[in-house]
Image (cartoon, rainbow over all chains, first blue to last red; front, side, top):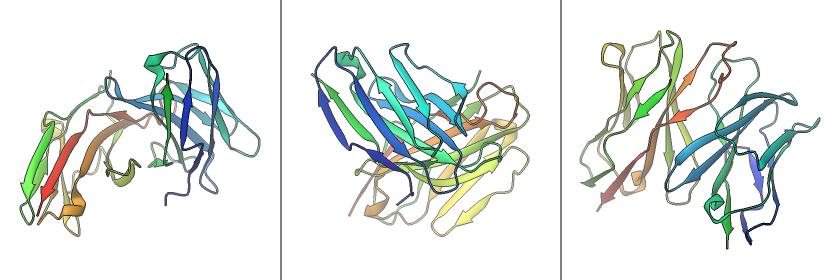
Length: 114
Length: 119
């Protein structure tokens, strides 16, 4: 158990809909990262937050957005969903102030868009 | 730009055989970190090791060992005396360490190598 929690574990929704994925980092970790894992793209970095502020952005679509709240949990919002958004979405957290420290991953949310 | 290449898509071995996973990386940074993660069939990503670019000392942890060679930009991983529980996808990843970098902390993953260990 990494200490990172993600809800829900599975999500099935239809095209055009909007969903919210939730992540709670390990106790004490200020950085939260979101990754998408799909068969065709592999594991791709989406976005990083550090203590409530956006720190780095990767290949995140404009239809996707994220935020980190004062209690450090994070949410990833996916809107106008398309079939291609079906993937496993991981959240990870890492310790504060340590360059490129190891990231501990949650169990993931499997999103299926039908 | 960062790039991580894991040329081996799948490796199949019989239990107790050794298996070596190759990882080649590209980066223009002089300071960076390399990682290995394991993804068993249950799907979670498990952290295995983190090495920085200034520490080329090889490391052994139980049945796992890592060979970091900066001259060839490789960070290979060996499982000795493999077991069925080692069956998983193994990912090599690279991260910049420059605090001012726009992608500080981002993990650039390779495509992964599926290891299948049969009894």
